[in-house]
Length: 405
Image (cartoon, rainbow, N blue to C red; front, side):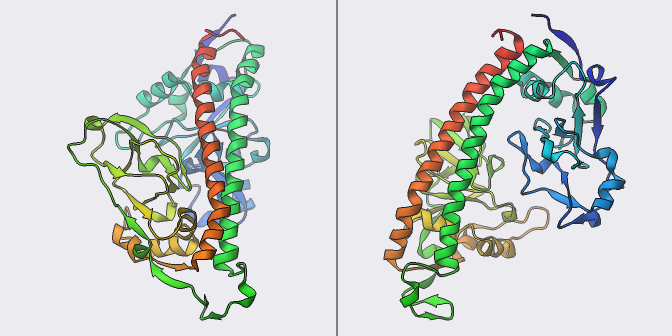
């Protein structure tokens, strides 16, 4: 099979495009509105896709003014500062959205390289390393259109690119399907909690007296009455391998990756012992909702001291997970956060938080429904880890031609 070796800039020179988003002087904070045309920022690029829940928006008038920065279908958007190894393939229904100030748009439509192929090509370890080595900046990496244009690329004929992309995307389609199923399971648990414990439409509510918003037999308690916070930490004398959860690896409701270390080589913050049923909450910038539930973990799982580790003692994890992630609870954390640049809460803030606790029988009934949902979501999450591992094993072999297609 013949392979073409070139640079990204030479490949897109005639028909493609490498373009950064608008300068800060062109797009101001005052331009953002609640409803309008989405603007893709680095924070919105996650797991190879654009997270539509976090995206900011501008008016159609502003989007028209910045029309040269509109995203084209099947283009690739990458951060040009910070986590420059991330990227997303723009879907047809996202065409017309704006490339944000902190991003680059790469268009290869009409060139010898297919967008789907480039998307996977850029995931290779050596490509990520090249971008990081050629980016400028020390505290934060910065990528320019000219640097991206110098990226070495290697690609086979179009038919082979299609086959390679199809093989890899089959894994990603399964991963995305599992992700959606997990989201549905999590939403089902969230809605049941709201129905029973926020709207107070729990079984038997018709016959329960409610005084000042509190049903008879229910009690408001501090979280410290229901759980331990930061119960256990590894001592500095520990010797062995650990699987480490860093704050950056946790997004709302999900641990996206763990890193394996010999404890002696691990970051000094790798101290919090976590066990099945624990809930971890990032103490820094609680508005980002970086939390996750620990479910059937390996015995050597350890979290950063930047997390508050909540260990339920008097209520089920299924209940406390929902209670500690409501808008009201997050608002409480935000109001108690200290610091300007990095607003953060501490363990005692969690301990003082109030939780409305129902009767024991209702807790048990809720747990009977929701705990199996947590287990199902965990099973799907493990499947995704296995699918990613298999895909990551195939990717470099397909891209090198070691595996013929």
